[in-house]
Length: 469
Image (cartoon, rainbow, N blue to C red):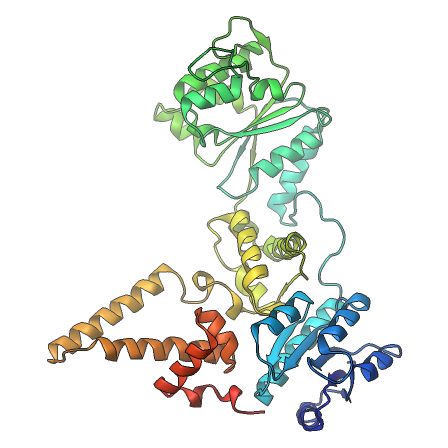
């Protein structure tokens, strides 16, 4: 393993790191100035770089900017005695792995360096793919079947019915079917048939003539005309109103349609791909969906597996979505630790791929460090999190209040409010290792407020990282 570099103009800080890293058998080098480190970079690159933010000459942020240009994958930890939000934001915007305010707890600093070392090694192994990903990701056998079906359908104009739970990627598959068909040069037009009222949906699909109804001041081409020669994707077809089911059936059987208020038939050279998360056979039995339309749509059926059925793809998809979110936000991509990846792989994800993508976007914005641990996940995904857990603690609180009343206590609001604040602030301090600024940010309060609360609640013993080097 390459050494960890520590850059700080304070000799005592360098000495603390030297002793701590030597005790952990972690190779190291220390430098008193930014320029010394930049000169040493010409000879070799460290495993991890730890730098003070304010030093004579070039600052730690300038060092961060310079090193990230030539070594973007190198984890850099920025530390400073000036624990202000502006410095933290600047460090993270510059691509810092973590922000470490002084004074700090030595054991926690070493643990942070170990995390950064693990991140550096995963980066070196090329764990994050840098090639342009395929349009649909999936290594699970069930997804390979989907890919094979797309390939077989590439030379066909047959109507396709895509089924699967919400969030499984039905529109992506429809788009892939279009792109790999002979109609690829023509439009791909998508419409969610459940997202608009019946009267508007009819006009959206088939267009309308001027004066066809109040407000129709000009002729409008519908989605069938817009998709001429290409593909029309009808999402959530199971929710289509009965009257429109009849009109759609006529288009599929006759190959022509009329605009709303129109009298001239219009030929439809369109391939229809429909999708639903519902059981259409059951809706047919219930009289909610036309059986003849079902058979017209169900020429080729393609079922998409839920994410629970392809758990081996969760890690692959998560990496892709973290990179995608980082590109959208213009930041460095974050990465899941092995433990976090294993934990996510056993979750149910009722929202499927869409839920996983939303989670990765949340982590890109909200996770405190580049390497994401289980503790960085949103509350509803953490062990014991979610609505049930919330209900449990509220019920427990209610029982405690009832017990206090039964015991003859009065004026109990201050007692329970103080206990609540002590628990919440204490937990926040424990999570941030006693770093008050970070705890205040988590809680949504100001630095002065949290300092006052710590004193009032006598929590100083729990915020040792603020009092130790």
